[in-house]
Image 1 (cartoon, rainbow, N blue to C red):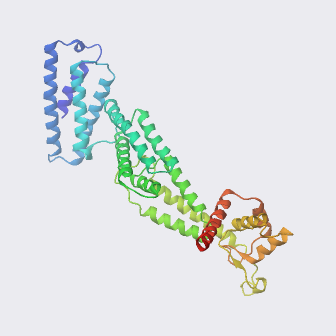
Image 2 (cartoon, helix red, strand yellow; image 1 turned 90 degrees about the horizontal axis):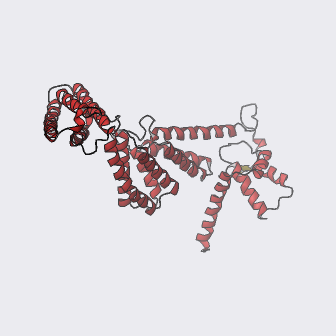
Image 3 (cartoon, rainbow, N blue to C red; image 1 turned 90 degrees about the vertical axis):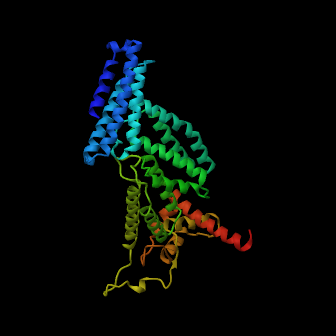
Length: 391
């Protein structure tokens, strides 16, 4: 291979600016085109002999990657020149493209995917991808994919296409992801297609920062809809199990330098679980005093406390809604809050008491997450009434 590449390098150098080869006569052009054909035949034969010889895989990989490197370097030199209609330069560029395509297609295990794709090949590949973008966008919209996710995917492709440069591994990833998503939109029917796309992007190992942020925000949004602490734990454990069991494609990630999205999300969920456990532990610190035997002094406990699945924040806001809707007359409100604190038990506090002062603060300062949780509870109540009485 080295002998044939050396001959090809000499031909390329002859076509560099300032060399007399740029004004070759017709017989000279014919002679060089014939030489390029001979180099092509000899080079492909040498590659096949190398691969199927008794030489070790390590040596074959080194030799083929050197050939790949030489081809890329020569192509770069040719691309820097405006060779116009020069048949010799065109034939050399075609041969170099053909060798690279042959190595990538037939001897992929030895091919260096970290190398930059030649400008000539990349323009063709990106042009084909750009043509398919409308098909992809239409498919995602037709399946009613969540608009932020649609925009995120389309922007990722547009940024890649407009970048004008890419490594072989990045190009292969983006081409496969585009075709895979198009086929998914065409072949799969599902009520919640956004979830299907999200799972598919996990399978494809699409670990872009934008998608990581989107996935986390969706996870937290679903978690906020659950107001019962135990249900939050159940949901997180379920999601953790699903993500850990997620099948992944046996190929490099979108960003090979960053950890896989499955690993990142698993760590994120574990952190959320630890946060809830800490929050639960803080609540348990408010237990009433113990007696001499180390047991809770039962005389300090009421005979019965109403157990609710609402958090303290949600309970305070629910109480506020009933007061403002004139379902409860709170005169004075401080006495009502003290009564609620003594006689209601929220999840995770064990035998501890609610703080009337804390309830008062939560009553006044309501965040959107709490309002969303209470609204979900009210929605369930409304559906029960509708089901029983057809309202």
